[in-house]
Length: 283
Image (cartoon, rainbow, N blue to C red; front, side, top):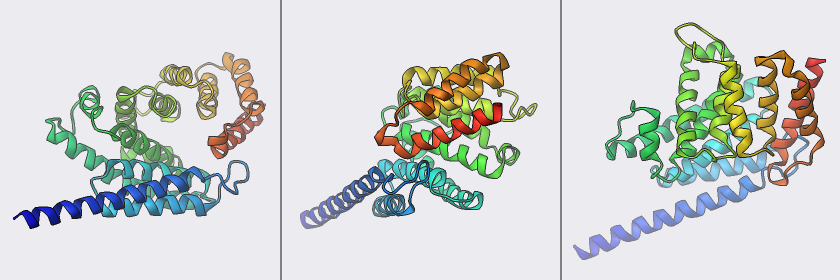
């Protein structure tokens, strides 16, 4: 009996060591994701290596929440900054959908074990999920990937798939768990969702340009340096009221003229490209 327990303990310890090593390797590759980038376009090799490492960690331990949310984050980076065509983006985000379903299912099993049903309110889910390390990040990055999927496949296709409601619920949960996560990420996703979602009666009638500005302003307060948020906020301000255009134009010029964070070199450069495109469109 003792020998059996000892062998079981050794197997669990070995599996834990493998997962830790694979996640650490994935983190190393993810930190190098900007190597060789050209503006807002990144090379595939570093992020592909990160994705492979996180997938190996999940294969070694399917219950590892950290590996799952970091895989979702890496998939989003590949789709947003590496994929060269819309078809490429679709392929990446379809992988992201599958990975996200697995990650959400894992978190929901852990919530169920604590007495929280999958269809519980966002507030009730967040209250318990806050005690599960990585759960907030799972909800956040799954909502981001679904948002990117919606852009790749088209807004109306996303509405038919129920993507808008899923993004709304998950980003709300992420925001309630930690409003400061990913630089106000939950509010950023919610604001972008309200700004970009088609207003379809009885389906997405909740979409509101006023709420878009509110949530994006909240996100900007958390991290005023986040260039993604500032570009989204500028666009939402004009969508809500064209009289806001002078303020929005200045915001975009500030995004273009301010130095980029070396930790987010690709993301910031892409946001500058988006700012230039908006300025050209508004002219």
